[in-house]
Length: 418
Image (cartoon, helix red, strand yellow):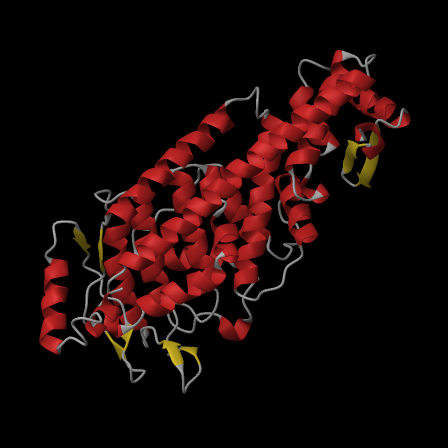
């Protein structure tokens, strides 16, 4: 981080202001340096905000290596996801639900907003069948926004009102009335992070200053010259540095990061972001705190490196989980085939779907429902015969009913005991 450069080394001692400025100019002019046209609000040692340096970072060997790792792991994840023999569609849908549940739970947890995993699971499981005009439940709009990302419906940001549209849609019903934006689009009131006597960051004070900062961000977001993961990370910094709303900035910023990575890489990479950040939350807050300091003159080299490490951790979590659950699925399927030799092809398809859902979802409430099984198996099977088979499997204690409205079954744990 540039702010530490002035302290020099044990041989050189503390550097003069002229030497520090010369090094700054040298870094800006470096062949591997990316200099943006965005000017963040940085905090002086006296706790005063200042806007004077552009965001820049150096594409070091470590950063380039990490970027290559992100791309390679995304290809590996995509290869697994596209292999329906190893990852059948119901298993894949279940795992996406598991990641989505984690993403929503942890992005709230990071902000100290308490949510219930079972409640989120119920929303994920039931949302697609909710009738129009029903009473909206807590987190429903958030779940819908992430499900739109999964479906490939990405909201592009072309102008300032787009930020407000995303914020309002993502966090509908989640923000207290006294914390809603008090300006035309953004907050009009000054805020600070930390305490009045010990400020960690003081973002732009007025709506005009916020609009200026985000107007600089929009062309950067829509410029394809930079590798997408680097662009996503720098965008995340600039949005959070600007802090355009009174509440919900972190959740909005992480949604933008997750949805962009899901669009440019793969769904699984995008939906592992908040899980990875939560696992490294102290590092996450530290790198923001350091990057927001005026001493660093807008340099994000170490911020970018640390965020790449977090994203890579998320991808490895995905790969580890996929491998573990695939092994469990193969083991349990073999056990059931060995024990239940007299199942019809339809009955086997039903049990197989439910087992996939059981193993790849994190919460029972987001698991596959009977009506979804019927939709997947009809055709070729008749709807009535599918329902009759589910009832027969339940009567034989192969399945257990766990929900009545809507109907939902799981594989009886006794059937799966070694």
